[in-house]
Length: 483
Image (cartoon, rainbow, N blue to C red):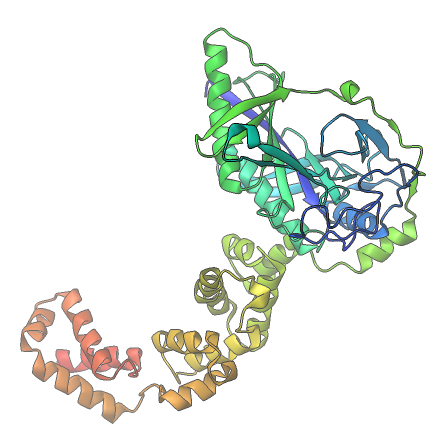
Protein backbone atom coordinates (compact mmCIF):
# COMPACT_ATOMS: atom_id res chain seq x y z
CA UNK A 1 0.00 0.00 0.00
CA UNK A 2 1.30 3.42 -0.94
CA UNK A 3 -0.81 5.31 1.59
CA UNK A 4 -2.01 4.73 5.13
CA UNK A 5 -5.16 6.31 6.52
CA UNK A 6 -5.18 7.53 10.12
CA UNK A 7 -8.51 8.25 11.84
CA UNK A 8 -9.57 9.34 15.32
CA UNK A 9 -13.20 9.90 16.31
CA UNK A 10 -14.80 12.41 18.65
CA UNK A 11 -18.28 11.24 19.60
CA UNK A 12 -20.90 13.47 21.18
CA UNK A 13 -23.19 11.25 23.24
CA UNK A 14 -26.33 12.88 24.62
CA UNK A 15 -26.85 11.61 28.16
CA UNK A 16 -30.24 10.17 29.04
CA UNK A 17 -31.13 12.56 31.86
CA UNK A 18 -34.60 14.10 32.10
CA UNK A 19 -33.17 17.56 32.70
CA UNK A 20 -30.21 19.54 31.36
CA UNK A 21 -26.69 19.45 32.70
CA UNK A 22 -26.76 22.85 34.46
CA UNK A 23 -30.49 23.64 34.71
CA UNK A 24 -33.80 21.97 35.46
CA UNK A 25 -35.16 22.44 31.91
CA UNK A 26 -36.42 19.36 30.10
CA UNK A 27 -34.31 17.49 27.54
CA UNK A 28 -37.39 16.07 25.76
CA UNK A 29 -37.05 16.02 21.98
CA UNK A 30 -39.56 17.63 19.63
CA UNK A 31 -40.88 20.50 21.75
CA UNK A 32 -41.77 23.80 20.01
CA UNK A 33 -38.74 26.10 19.56
CA UNK A 34 -37.47 27.56 22.85
CA UNK A 35 -40.16 25.80 24.93
CA UNK A 36 -37.44 23.97 26.88
CA UNK A 37 -35.07 26.91 27.35
CA UNK A 38 -34.77 28.18 30.93
CA UNK A 39 -33.20 31.38 32.26
CA UNK A 40 -29.93 29.47 32.74
CA UNK A 41 -29.99 28.12 29.17
CA UNK A 42 -30.51 31.54 27.61
CA UNK A 43 -27.89 33.11 29.92
CA UNK A 44 -29.98 35.80 31.57
CA UNK A 45 -27.89 38.08 33.85
CA UNK A 46 -27.34 36.77 37.37
CA UNK A 47 -28.19 33.10 36.76
CA UNK A 48 -25.85 30.37 37.97
CA UNK A 49 -25.34 26.80 36.71
CA UNK A 50 -25.95 23.80 39.01
CA UNK A 51 -24.43 20.47 37.97
CA UNK A 52 -26.81 17.55 37.26
CA UNK A 53 -25.80 14.57 39.42
CA UNK A 54 -27.39 12.14 36.95
CA UNK A 55 -25.04 13.29 34.18
CA UNK A 56 -22.02 12.63 36.38
CA UNK A 57 -23.32 9.17 37.33
CA UNK A 58 -23.63 8.30 33.63
CA UNK A 59 -20.08 9.48 32.97
CA UNK A 60 -18.86 7.22 35.79
CA UNK A 61 -20.80 4.32 34.29
CA UNK A 62 -19.04 4.84 30.97
CA UNK A 63 -15.63 5.07 32.63
CA UNK A 64 -16.21 1.76 34.41
CA UNK A 65 -17.43 0.11 31.19
CA UNK A 66 -14.31 1.02 29.17
CA UNK A 67 -11.80 0.47 31.96
CA UNK A 68 -10.88 4.15 32.10
CA UNK A 69 -9.46 6.15 34.98
CA UNK A 70 -12.25 8.10 36.67
CA UNK A 71 -10.83 11.37 37.94
CA UNK A 72 -11.46 11.81 41.65
CA UNK A 73 -11.29 15.54 41.06
CA UNK A 74 -12.09 17.21 37.74
CA UNK A 75 -12.89 20.77 36.76
CA UNK A 76 -15.15 22.61 34.34
CA UNK A 77 -13.83 25.24 31.97
CA UNK A 78 -15.23 27.93 29.74
CA UNK A 79 -14.57 27.32 26.04
CA UNK A 80 -14.93 30.73 24.43
CA UNK A 81 -16.31 31.18 20.92
CA UNK A 82 -19.16 33.04 19.30
CA UNK A 83 -22.14 31.46 17.59
CA UNK A 84 -25.68 32.83 17.54
CA UNK A 85 -26.97 29.65 19.22
CA UNK A 86 -24.51 29.92 22.14
CA UNK A 87 -26.09 32.69 24.24
CA UNK A 88 -23.32 32.97 26.87
CA UNK A 89 -20.58 33.36 24.26
CA UNK A 90 -18.86 30.34 25.78
CA UNK A 91 -19.55 26.64 26.27
CA UNK A 92 -19.10 24.98 29.66
CA UNK A 93 -16.90 21.97 29.04
CA UNK A 94 -13.89 20.18 30.53
CA UNK A 95 -10.35 20.64 29.27
CA UNK A 96 -7.32 20.00 31.47
CA UNK A 97 -8.89 17.45 33.82
CA UNK A 98 -11.76 15.46 32.24
CA UNK A 99 -14.01 13.16 34.25
CA UNK A 100 -12.70 10.02 32.45
CA UNK A 101 -9.19 9.48 31.14
CA UNK A 102 -7.97 6.50 29.13
CA UNK A 103 -9.83 3.23 28.63
CA UNK A 104 -10.34 1.25 25.45
CA UNK A 105 -12.90 -0.36 23.15
CA UNK A 106 -12.29 -3.65 21.33
CA UNK A 107 -13.60 -3.93 17.78
CA UNK A 108 -13.43 -6.39 14.90
CA UNK A 109 -11.53 -4.95 11.94
CA UNK A 110 -12.39 -6.42 8.52
CA UNK A 111 -8.66 -6.56 7.67
CA UNK A 112 -6.79 -6.69 11.00
CA UNK A 113 -9.07 -8.91 13.09
CA UNK A 114 -9.68 -7.99 16.72
CA UNK A 115 -8.05 -4.67 17.62
CA UNK A 116 -8.08 -2.46 20.69
CA UNK A 117 -8.91 1.21 20.13
CA UNK A 118 -7.49 3.40 22.88
CA UNK A 119 -9.57 6.22 24.32
CA UNK A 120 -7.96 9.54 25.15
CA UNK A 121 -10.70 10.94 27.35
CA UNK A 122 -14.40 11.38 27.94
CA UNK A 123 -15.53 14.72 29.26
CA UNK A 124 -18.81 16.33 30.26
CA UNK A 125 -20.09 19.43 28.50
CA UNK A 126 -23.24 21.25 27.46
CA UNK A 127 -24.67 21.28 23.95
CA UNK A 128 -25.37 24.46 22.01
CA UNK A 129 -28.69 25.50 20.48
CA UNK A 130 -29.66 25.25 16.84
CA UNK A 131 -30.01 27.77 14.01
CA UNK A 132 -33.12 27.28 11.86
CA UNK A 133 -32.85 28.64 8.32
CA UNK A 134 -36.12 29.35 6.50
CA UNK A 135 -36.40 30.61 2.93
CA UNK A 136 -39.23 32.95 2.06
CA UNK A 137 -40.92 33.30 -1.33
CA UNK A 138 -38.48 36.08 -2.15
CA UNK A 139 -34.82 36.07 -1.20
CA UNK A 140 -35.40 39.17 0.90
CA UNK A 141 -37.81 37.19 3.10
CA UNK A 142 -35.23 34.56 4.09
CA UNK A 143 -34.94 34.26 7.86
CA UNK A 144 -32.79 32.52 10.44
CA UNK A 145 -34.25 31.72 13.84
CA UNK A 146 -32.58 30.41 16.98
CA UNK A 147 -33.98 27.41 18.87
CA UNK A 148 -32.37 27.03 22.29
CA UNK A 149 -34.10 23.81 23.30
CA UNK A 150 -30.84 21.89 22.93
CA UNK A 151 -28.78 24.54 24.73
CA UNK A 152 -27.54 22.94 27.95
CA UNK A 153 -28.37 19.36 26.93
CA UNK A 154 -25.82 17.11 28.70
CA UNK A 155 -23.15 15.56 26.49
CA UNK A 156 -20.33 13.13 27.13
CA UNK A 157 -17.71 13.74 24.45
CA UNK A 158 -15.71 10.55 23.89
CA UNK A 159 -12.36 11.02 22.14
CA UNK A 160 -10.40 8.13 20.64
CA UNK A 161 -6.70 7.93 19.85
CA UNK A 162 -5.85 7.87 16.09
CA UNK A 163 -5.83 4.05 16.06
CA UNK A 164 -8.26 3.48 13.15
CA UNK A 165 -6.89 2.77 9.69
CA UNK A 166 -9.90 2.71 7.35
CA UNK A 167 -13.46 3.90 6.94
CA UNK A 168 -14.60 0.35 7.70
CA UNK A 169 -12.75 0.36 11.03
CA UNK A 170 -14.17 3.79 11.90
CA UNK A 171 -17.70 2.51 11.31
CA UNK A 172 -16.97 -0.67 13.32
CA UNK A 173 -15.74 1.48 16.22
CA UNK A 174 -18.73 3.83 16.01
CA UNK A 175 -21.18 0.91 15.92
CA UNK A 176 -19.49 -0.75 18.89
CA UNK A 177 -19.52 2.48 20.89
CA UNK A 178 -23.14 3.13 19.90
CA UNK A 179 -24.14 -0.34 21.15
CA UNK A 180 -22.18 0.14 24.39
CA UNK A 181 -23.71 3.47 25.43
CA UNK A 182 -27.18 2.05 24.82
CA UNK A 183 -26.30 -1.17 26.66
CA UNK A 184 -25.21 0.64 29.82
CA UNK A 185 -28.22 2.97 29.61
CA UNK A 186 -26.48 6.34 29.34
CA UNK A 187 -27.80 7.32 25.87
CA UNK A 188 -30.76 6.31 23.70
CA UNK A 189 -28.49 6.32 20.63
CA UNK A 190 -31.09 7.99 18.39
CA UNK A 191 -28.92 9.34 15.58
CA UNK A 192 -31.86 10.96 13.75
CA UNK A 193 -32.53 13.14 16.80
CA UNK A 194 -28.85 13.99 17.28
CA UNK A 195 -28.34 11.88 20.40
CA UNK A 196 -25.23 10.22 18.95
CA UNK A 197 -23.08 12.03 16.42
CA UNK A 198 -19.44 11.78 15.45
CA UNK A 199 -16.66 14.04 14.22
CA UNK A 200 -13.97 12.21 12.25
CA UNK A 201 -10.37 13.47 12.28
CA UNK A 202 -8.84 12.13 9.07
CA UNK A 203 -5.27 12.29 7.76
CA UNK A 204 -3.10 10.27 5.40
CA UNK A 205 0.59 9.39 5.34
CA UNK A 206 2.81 7.32 3.11
CA UNK A 207 3.11 3.67 4.12
CA UNK A 208 5.95 3.16 6.58
CA UNK A 209 5.94 6.71 7.92
CA UNK A 210 5.35 7.27 11.64
CA UNK A 211 4.65 11.02 11.73
CA UNK A 212 1.01 11.98 11.49
CA UNK A 213 -0.19 13.91 8.45
CA UNK A 214 -2.21 17.13 8.57
CA UNK A 215 -5.70 16.23 9.70
CA UNK A 216 -9.10 17.55 8.70
CA UNK A 217 -12.14 17.22 10.94
CA UNK A 218 -15.44 16.16 9.38
CA UNK A 219 -18.21 17.44 11.65
CA UNK A 220 -21.56 16.02 12.76
CA UNK A 221 -21.74 12.65 11.02
CA UNK A 222 -25.10 11.27 12.14
CA UNK A 223 -25.27 8.00 10.20
CA UNK A 224 -22.85 5.13 9.78
CA UNK A 225 -23.30 5.20 6.00
CA UNK A 226 -22.49 8.90 5.81
CA UNK A 227 -19.44 8.34 8.00
CA UNK A 228 -18.11 5.69 5.62
CA UNK A 229 -18.78 7.82 2.54
CA UNK A 230 -17.31 10.99 4.06
CA UNK A 231 -14.08 9.34 5.19
CA UNK A 232 -13.59 7.58 1.85
CA UNK A 233 -14.04 10.88 -0.02
CA UNK A 234 -11.76 12.79 2.35
CA UNK A 235 -8.98 10.20 2.08
CA UNK A 236 -9.10 10.36 -1.73
CA UNK A 237 -9.16 14.18 -1.63
CA UNK A 238 -6.10 14.43 0.61
CA UNK A 239 -4.11 11.88 -1.41
CA UNK A 240 -4.92 13.75 -4.62
CA UNK A 241 -3.72 17.04 -3.09
CA UNK A 242 -0.39 15.56 -2.01
CA UNK A 243 0.12 13.78 -5.35
CA UNK A 244 -0.36 17.14 -7.06
CA UNK A 245 2.36 18.69 -4.90
CA UNK A 246 -0.08 20.70 -2.80
CA UNK A 247 -0.59 20.70 0.96
CA UNK A 248 -3.51 19.56 3.06
CA UNK A 249 -4.84 22.48 5.12
CA UNK A 250 -5.98 21.78 8.68
CA UNK A 251 -9.64 22.71 8.70
CA UNK A 252 -13.15 21.69 9.71
CA UNK A 253 -15.26 20.25 6.90
CA UNK A 254 -18.88 19.24 6.44
CA UNK A 255 -20.19 16.24 4.51
CA UNK A 256 -22.77 16.81 1.78
CA UNK A 257 -24.65 13.49 1.38
CA UNK A 258 -26.37 14.63 -1.82
CA UNK A 259 -23.05 15.26 -3.59
CA UNK A 260 -21.20 12.64 -1.54
CA UNK A 261 -18.35 15.02 -0.85
CA UNK A 262 -16.86 17.03 2.00
CA UNK A 263 -16.57 20.81 1.78
CA UNK A 264 -14.71 23.40 3.80
CA UNK A 265 -16.55 24.93 6.76
CA UNK A 266 -13.88 26.91 8.65
CA UNK A 267 -10.22 26.79 9.58
CA UNK A 268 -9.56 24.32 12.37
CA UNK A 269 -9.21 25.95 15.76
CA UNK A 270 -6.56 24.91 18.25
CA UNK A 271 -7.02 24.85 22.01
CA UNK A 272 -5.47 28.29 22.49
CA UNK A 273 -8.05 29.78 20.10
CA UNK A 274 -10.80 28.93 22.59
CA UNK A 275 -9.05 30.68 25.54
CA UNK A 276 -9.98 27.96 28.03
CA UNK A 277 -10.07 28.98 31.68
CA UNK A 278 -11.71 27.41 34.78
CA UNK A 279 -15.38 28.30 35.16
CA UNK A 280 -15.63 30.46 38.31
CA UNK A 281 -19.31 29.57 38.79
CA UNK A 282 -18.70 25.81 39.17
CA UNK A 283 -16.63 24.22 41.94
CA UNK A 284 -14.40 21.22 41.16
CA UNK A 285 -16.25 17.95 40.62
CA UNK A 286 -15.23 15.50 43.37
CA UNK A 287 -16.04 11.79 42.91
CA UNK A 288 -15.23 9.50 45.83
CA UNK A 289 -14.45 5.78 45.73
CA UNK A 290 -17.77 4.83 47.33
CA UNK A 291 -19.73 6.46 44.50
CA UNK A 292 -17.69 4.64 41.84
CA UNK A 293 -18.18 1.29 43.58
CA UNK A 294 -21.90 1.95 43.95
CA UNK A 295 -22.17 2.58 40.20
CA UNK A 296 -20.04 -0.48 39.40
CA UNK A 297 -22.18 -2.73 41.60
CA UNK A 298 -25.35 -1.61 39.84
CA UNK A 299 -24.12 -2.33 36.32
CA UNK A 300 -25.18 -5.37 34.34
CA UNK A 301 -22.77 -7.73 32.58
CA UNK A 302 -21.00 -5.83 29.81
CA UNK A 303 -21.24 -6.86 26.12
CA UNK A 304 -17.67 -8.10 25.78
CA UNK A 305 -17.93 -10.29 28.88
CA UNK A 306 -21.28 -11.63 27.71
CA UNK A 307 -19.87 -12.45 24.25
CA UNK A 308 -17.07 -14.46 25.79
CA UNK A 309 -19.52 -16.29 28.06
CA UNK A 310 -21.80 -17.14 25.13
CA UNK A 311 -18.87 -18.68 23.27
CA UNK A 312 -17.66 -20.55 26.37
CA UNK A 313 -20.95 -21.73 27.89
CA UNK A 314 -23.11 -22.18 24.80
CA UNK A 315 -20.45 -23.24 22.26
CA UNK A 316 -21.54 -20.47 19.88
CA UNK A 317 -19.31 -19.03 17.17
CA UNK A 318 -17.69 -15.65 17.81
CA UNK A 319 -19.85 -14.23 15.02
CA UNK A 320 -23.13 -15.47 16.56
CA UNK A 321 -22.08 -14.26 20.02
CA UNK A 322 -21.22 -10.81 18.63
CA UNK A 323 -24.56 -10.50 16.81
CA UNK A 324 -26.57 -11.71 19.81
CA UNK A 325 -24.98 -9.07 22.04
CA UNK A 326 -25.68 -6.20 19.66
CA UNK A 327 -28.29 -5.02 22.18
CA UNK A 328 -29.05 -5.95 25.77
CA UNK A 329 -32.66 -6.82 24.88
CA UNK A 330 -31.62 -9.30 22.17
CA UNK A 331 -29.06 -10.98 24.44
CA UNK A 332 -31.61 -11.26 27.25
CA UNK A 333 -34.25 -12.76 24.96
CA UNK A 334 -31.74 -15.32 23.64
CA UNK A 335 -30.90 -16.51 27.16
CA UNK A 336 -34.59 -16.69 28.02
CA UNK A 337 -35.08 -19.05 25.07
CA UNK A 338 -32.14 -21.23 26.15
CA UNK A 339 -33.43 -21.37 29.73
CA UNK A 340 -36.63 -23.03 28.47
CA UNK A 341 -34.48 -26.01 27.48
CA UNK A 342 -33.86 -25.21 23.81
CA UNK A 343 -30.44 -26.07 22.36
CA UNK A 344 -28.37 -22.83 22.15
CA UNK A 345 -27.52 -23.08 18.45
CA UNK A 346 -31.19 -23.52 17.51
CA UNK A 347 -32.11 -20.58 19.76
CA UNK A 348 -29.38 -18.43 18.18
CA UNK A 349 -30.52 -19.29 14.64
CA UNK A 350 -34.08 -18.20 15.41
CA UNK A 351 -33.08 -15.06 17.33
CA UNK A 352 -30.80 -13.90 14.51
CA UNK A 353 -33.18 -15.12 11.80
CA UNK A 354 -36.97 -14.91 12.15
CA UNK A 355 -37.01 -12.90 15.39
CA UNK A 356 -34.57 -10.21 14.23
CA UNK A 357 -36.14 -10.03 10.76
CA UNK A 358 -39.60 -9.47 12.24
CA UNK A 359 -38.32 -6.73 14.56
CA UNK A 360 -36.50 -4.93 11.74
CA UNK A 361 -39.52 -5.20 9.44
CA UNK A 362 -41.74 -3.71 12.14
CA UNK A 363 -39.04 -1.09 12.88
CA UNK A 364 -39.21 -1.73 16.62
CA UNK A 365 -36.62 -2.28 19.32
CA UNK A 366 -36.06 -5.87 20.44
CA UNK A 367 -37.26 -4.86 23.90
CA UNK A 368 -40.67 -4.00 22.40
CA UNK A 369 -41.08 -7.25 20.44
CA UNK A 370 -44.56 -8.80 20.86
CA UNK A 371 -43.00 -12.30 21.19
CA UNK A 372 -41.01 -12.86 24.37
CA UNK A 373 -38.06 -15.19 24.90
CA UNK A 374 -40.09 -17.73 26.91
CA UNK A 375 -42.83 -17.74 24.22
CA UNK A 376 -40.30 -18.39 21.47
CA UNK A 377 -38.74 -21.13 23.59
CA UNK A 378 -42.14 -22.82 23.94
CA UNK A 379 -42.52 -22.76 20.13
CA UNK A 380 -39.06 -24.20 19.46
CA UNK A 381 -39.67 -27.03 21.93
CA UNK A 382 -42.54 -28.14 19.67
CA UNK A 383 -40.11 -28.33 16.77
CA UNK A 384 -37.66 -30.36 18.81
CA UNK A 385 -40.28 -32.86 20.05
CA UNK A 386 -41.68 -33.31 16.52
CA UNK A 387 -45.07 -31.72 17.17
CA UNK A 388 -44.55 -29.37 14.21
CA UNK A 389 -41.96 -29.00 11.45
CA UNK A 390 -39.53 -26.12 11.16
CA UNK A 391 -41.52 -24.76 8.22
CA UNK A 392 -44.79 -24.79 10.14
CA UNK A 393 -43.01 -23.20 13.11
CA UNK A 394 -42.41 -20.11 10.98
CA UNK A 395 -46.15 -19.82 10.29
CA UNK A 396 -46.89 -20.24 14.00
CA UNK A 397 -44.28 -17.58 14.82
CA UNK A 398 -45.97 -15.12 12.43
CA UNK A 399 -49.28 -15.77 14.21
CA UNK A 400 -47.62 -15.24 17.59
CA UNK A 401 -46.07 -11.98 16.37
CA UNK A 402 -49.53 -10.82 15.27
CA UNK A 403 -50.80 -11.47 18.80
CA UNK A 404 -53.03 -14.44 18.01
CA UNK A 405 -54.07 -16.52 21.05
CA UNK A 406 -52.00 -14.29 23.29
CA UNK A 407 -48.81 -15.54 21.67
CA UNK A 408 -49.38 -19.09 22.96
CA UNK A 409 -47.73 -21.47 20.48
CA UNK A 410 -49.65 -24.57 21.67
CA UNK A 411 -52.99 -22.75 21.38
CA UNK A 412 -52.20 -21.62 17.82
CA UNK A 413 -51.08 -25.13 16.79
CA UNK A 414 -54.25 -26.67 18.22
CA UNK A 415 -56.65 -24.07 16.78
CA UNK A 416 -55.18 -24.28 13.28
CA UNK A 417 -54.70 -28.04 13.32
CA UNK A 418 -50.99 -27.77 12.57
CA UNK A 419 -49.78 -30.81 14.49
CA UNK A 420 -47.22 -32.72 12.40
CA UNK A 421 -48.23 -36.06 10.85
CA UNK A 422 -45.92 -38.72 12.21
CA UNK A 423 -48.25 -41.70 11.82
CA UNK A 424 -46.42 -44.29 9.70
CA UNK A 425 -49.57 -45.52 7.99
CA UNK A 426 -50.66 -42.03 6.97
CA UNK A 427 -47.21 -41.17 5.59
CA UNK A 428 -47.05 -44.51 3.71
CA UNK A 429 -50.31 -43.68 1.94
CA UNK A 430 -49.17 -40.17 1.04
CA UNK A 431 -45.93 -41.52 -0.43
CA UNK A 432 -47.70 -44.28 -2.35
CA UNK A 433 -50.12 -41.77 -3.88
CA UNK A 434 -47.30 -39.43 -4.97
CA UNK A 435 -45.25 -42.29 -6.48
CA UNK A 436 -48.27 -43.51 -8.41
CA UNK A 437 -49.10 -40.05 -9.71
CA UNK A 438 -45.55 -39.16 -10.84
CA UNK A 439 -44.01 -42.09 -12.79
CA UNK A 440 -41.72 -39.81 -14.85
CA UNK A 441 -40.15 -38.25 -11.75
CA UNK A 442 -39.81 -41.70 -10.16
CA UNK A 443 -37.92 -42.87 -13.24
CA UNK A 444 -35.53 -39.92 -12.93
CA UNK A 445 -34.92 -40.75 -9.26
CA UNK A 446 -34.07 -44.34 -10.14
CA UNK A 447 -31.72 -42.97 -12.81
CA UNK A 448 -29.78 -41.24 -10.02
CA UNK A 449 -31.09 -37.67 -10.25
CA UNK A 450 -31.03 -36.16 -6.74
CA UNK A 451 -33.15 -33.12 -7.70
CA UNK A 452 -35.93 -35.48 -8.80
CA UNK A 453 -35.96 -37.08 -5.33
CA UNK A 454 -36.28 -33.65 -3.72
CA UNK A 455 -39.18 -32.91 -6.05
CA UNK A 456 -41.00 -36.02 -4.82
CA UNK A 457 -40.39 -35.00 -1.20
CA UNK A 458 -41.89 -31.60 -2.02
CA UNK A 459 -44.97 -33.18 -3.53
CA UNK A 460 -45.51 -35.36 -0.47
CA UNK A 461 -45.14 -32.35 1.81
CA UNK A 462 -47.57 -30.39 -0.38
CA UNK A 463 -50.07 -33.24 -0.28
CA UNK A 464 -49.87 -33.20 3.53
CA UNK A 465 -50.20 -29.39 3.58
CA UNK A 466 -46.77 -29.24 5.17
CA UNK A 467 -47.77 -31.39 8.13
CA UNK A 468 -45.88 -34.58 7.34
CA UNK A 469 -42.69 -35.24 9.30
CA UNK A 470 -39.96 -34.44 6.73
CA UNK A 471 -37.49 -36.97 8.14
CA UNK A 472 -40.07 -39.76 7.95
CA UNK A 473 -41.08 -38.73 4.42
CA UNK A 474 -37.45 -38.97 3.30
CA UNK A 475 -36.96 -42.36 4.93
CA UNK A 476 -40.19 -43.87 3.54
CA UNK A 477 -39.54 -42.52 0.04
CA UNK A 478 -36.02 -43.94 -0.06
CA UNK A 479 -37.23 -47.29 1.20
CA UNK A 480 -40.07 -47.55 -1.33
CA UNK A 481 -38.03 -46.33 -4.31
CA UNK A 482 -35.18 -48.74 -3.59
CA UNK A 483 -37.53 -51.75 -3.23
